[in-house]
Length: 116
Image (tube, rainbow, N blue to C red; front, side):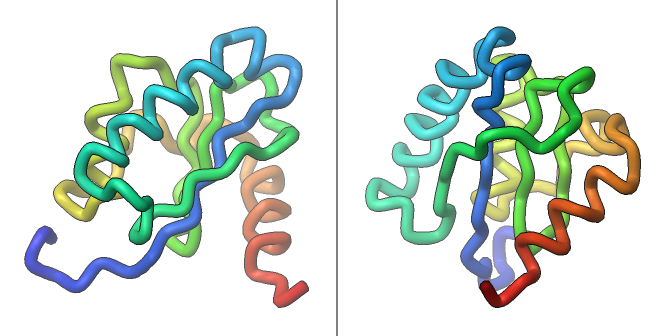
């Protein structure tokens, strides 16, 4: 995977009420530090905060587009693996996927796929 040309990824970390209470704001900062270690200007991975994905029971939630990866129940212990995926060095972290309802994921992808 590392040899392939990596496309730019847009990564959103939920900072809604439930996720922020679980530490998403701090987790965002730690993920940013990990990504900046290899890509100081964050040119390959655009990291953003998102107000709420609607998967509150499964937080902390992170989405990766255009991969259509919806990570849930994310903790600090998962950040090295997630960063590896985002940097194109490893496959997605499967144990963090499939926790939210499929319709919640689909709404997010529709929003991100929209040209508006």
